[in-house]
Image (cartoon, rainbow, N blue to C red; front, side):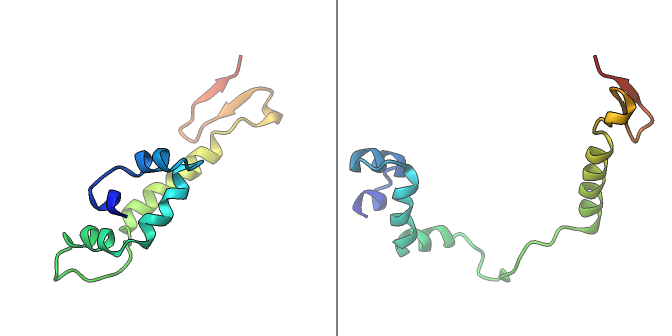
Length: 93
């Protein structure tokens, strides 16, 4: 804990302690309230807690991307041809 408080990187601590993985060192980070308090300190006092809700325009854009990805997959019945929603037909070599 003293090393964490001194600002030593958790990967360095993991190596010094002989941990198999850096994930093992994460236990110490979760247990240290002082580190959590420092992380939360820059939060504006007038902010309201909650989850981020993206605007409808962003959601529509992301849905469009997933629709595009699904429609641009090659169709085996097209004998190597792939039809894109933008009207582009490609031949696979």
